[in-house]
Length: 291
Image: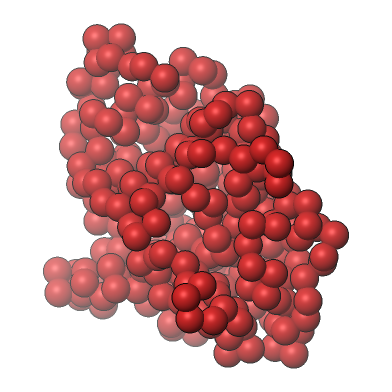
């Protein structure tokens, strides 16, 4: 994929939008805040062929010309963040259509991610450390702190090679907390490269389901559906999926956005066992909801 600024001159017109994502947020450990998150659960939605090839190229150009921060983690995944408000505004009507209420989020968070590896089991709430760092600038009792993580949108942009079918799995289980990676039963040396805190034992946490009910912790140790695992999640250590059930399994396909709860556990694969991609690029947009 090749994009020039001259090809999309409006890329030069987008200003730098301030990102104060966690500054708007209440404490996810507060019982009333947790209940507000639970009350707003919705099922996963997927839109097929929603963005054109030209629009995907525009997003690709935006990543390399308008984002304000780049970092990478230990497994080589590159993240480009800040200034994603511009992407939302470019396609506002479309985003508001697939996520009614998106326009009420005071800010749009997220990142572009260029990865060499599949995404293991995690949720994309927000890092607790990032939230705590905002308390110096925005006190916990500040009037603006009346929002919680709500819904996220992932937009697959490309895979390399482009003829490899890969999938994303979104589970019934939601973990109403800050962002985590889930490494249940993983022994030293098998850890996942991440900047998120890690859950190493599912029996120590509560999972909530789509209807808001709490899963009995005894169920958190049940084996995962082996048939589904063999077809879609073979790349993930089987024991990591203890206590989970798949809610939605969909193709990770360029231009087809996936909308899901911010606290919902999900994972992706590398393609099929005999045909895998080498790297892929996607865009994650995160939206808040007023309590």
